[in-house]
Length: 435
Length: 175
Image 1 (cartoon, rainbow over the protein chains, first blue to last red):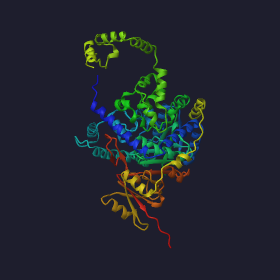
Image 2: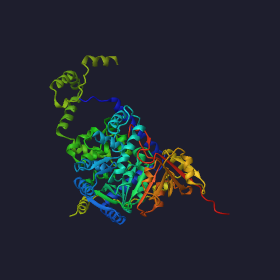
Image 3: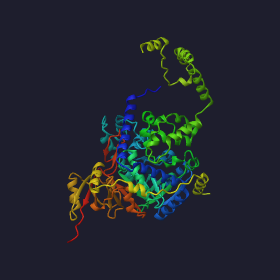
Image 4: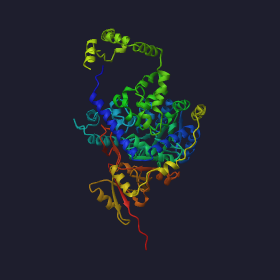
């Protein structure tokens, strides 16, 4: 069994709780906060119930702006569209921004298999890429990595000073290193936080400016987003840009909120609009509100289970409350065990800026996926044992021997679990008498 | 069937409950406004890691930028359209006198706006922009930043390391 680094667990728990605290302070400083959440939820519900008309409007506007629009039913088509675009433009080096859609559709391994050098440019994502790992949080991808690990990694990959793990030094080393890639890239790509139907523009929010660097130099720009990213107009952006960063990182807004509509002079601008299972979520009334999600990561920062487990404990690539629900929708067989990584405290539902009913959905999915005959038998048995004091006493008396037997049996269930010693009857009696 | 048609068919087959477009006038009118938007703007720029300097209508932005950042080697001065009090953002369009990348690749970015251009919040900002499309537009608040290494805040991730805003004072009408 892998030894748990409790200091790291505590650090992550406390750090994410600080982010949650920053969010609280900003939310409380706005008397209209709950009205904003309500407005965000209602705009999203309107948008997802008018998708064909809003997507059509978006496409018409985007074409009029000079963008080229592509449609992808699923991950495979998304990968193929982007791969074909890059190959037809003879792209050798490709810089990309953080995009959960690209993780969902496993874009990078595909492009690398085509021989296209693909560079993640968000610092956290770059750390994860160089480690050959995967993000453990959707907004703070490298939250589980300690500065010493980054220092050792950059020493190997970028030639930084041995033993220097100062975050400022390491960040500026990565800035210098990645600038070479920005200056020589043949194409740049972003996801999209919002796609505005009335204007045909894609809005991208970042703090680092990597999306802006990556789209300001190369002759080919790609923006890809899921159909759930559509919002009706700029008036709605007022609501979402006020909520997003306040909830995600506890900032009033991200450093850069960029609106891309036309291609840069002399460049091409391609937009890829992706379904990949979203229409299926829309068809499920119990889960359609998942399409409200802004991917702010707020539900992870507030979740008492996520904060201690970290992202790698979950089966789906998006962890935390929203990841549990998205995973169960995408691949229930693989992800249904994650439904137990929830205390049903409802903190996520109370915090979500677009009012996704995260905990309620987890509860409903448990009823659907987790009520087996075995479990019912177990509850019945427990009910019998606890139904009379003498039955409970007898069972407890058999406890220590029972534990030993379990250990000896070495059932597969016991692998990786601790078998605590149950106090003997003598100790229990002594404790009772002490009282 | 094209992929677009296939997606639209799936969306129509989903038959979701239909929700009407919400009226945002209530949340907009309930939103916090500031007695002194200029003071709030200055506070917000500083909160985002930037600097602010008020200048007179006839002052040279180059000299003012130099006085804000005497050590800076590579200063880009850009004209902004307006500022946003609640978060210290400056809105910029595609520059006409330089490539767009200068906003990001310069080590120091100094943005010039008229001080009476400041709006209270993002609702007012988007109302001001309307639905007109100009090809490109960006809100910038303070220097480029990251906290991806152990949540330690570092300025200058990829974009400008230093950012200043020059607030140009209103020209008083001639008596």
